[in-house]
Image (cartoon, rainbow, N blue to C red; front, side):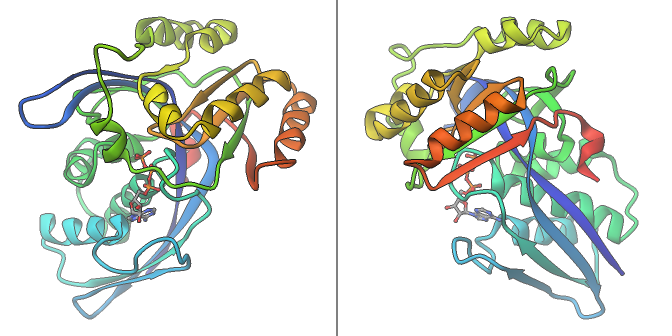
Length: 289
Ligand code: ATP
C-alpha cells in the first residue's frame, strides 16, 4: 500500500521564551501557522521488518539522524508494527531555516503511518509521540494555526490568520537552534505580546496581527548574523505590512495582502538573496491532505 502526506513549513507569528526550566528545556509561548511551502512524504508498506529512507536532498541525512526515520522507528515501537516502511522524502522546505522542515517531515510520517497501517490512534496520541522527537513536532502533527506552550508540546488551536501572502527570504546560512538558545539572555531580550496576537487571530484583525508579531530569539540571531536585520529592513522598505524572523532563523518573512505588492517585494529581494519564496498562508488543518 502507498500513501502521500504533505509536510508544510510553519512560521512563528510570535515566539516568546519565558524561562529556562529545571529539565533544561525552555518554557515558550509560540503562535504558529502553516504556509503553502511543503515537503512531500511518500510511504509504502514493506513485508520485511525494516525502515528504508530515500531522501532526495544532499542537505539531510539518509539514516536515523533524519527526523522522518526517527518518527517511523517510534511508530513501529509504539504500535508494535511488525511490517516495514519505505519513506521517500522530497525536500522543498529549506533546511535549518527556522521553518520546522524536519519536524514537519516527522509529523507527516506519524500521520502517514497511522493511515498506512490503519492504526487506532488520535492526533493527540501522535502529538505525544511527536514531542519525544522534537518540540515543534506536536504542532506539526495538528497543523493549522495554534498557540504552543510548555516546551512547545501543549497545543491550543486558533483560527487561521486572515488570508494574506507570505514572502520569505533565507540568507545563505544555516542556524543551529541550540546555539541561539545558548546565547539568549531572557531578561535582556524583547518579549512579544502573545495575548494580543491571539486576540488578533480570534477577531480576524489583520492590522492587529501585523502589529503583534514578535520573536524573542530575533535579537540573538541578528547579533550573530546581521544580514537577518538587513533582510527585514529591505522587506519593510519594499512595502511589507510586517516582517519577522521565524523560529531561531535565519529565514525572515513578511506578510502582505495584495499579490502585486507581494510580487514587488519578492522581485526586490531576488536582487540580492537567492532563496526567496512567495506563498499563501494556509493556517487551517484540512490543507494537510
Ligand atoms: P525549527 O524551526 O523546528 O527549529 P529548523 O527549520 O530550524 O527547525 P530543520 O530544517 O528542521 O531546522 O533542520 C534542523 C537540523 O535537523 C538540520 O541540521 C538537519 O540536518 C536535521 N534534520 C534531520 N532530519 C531532517 C529532515 N527531515 N529535514 C530537515 N532537516 C533534518
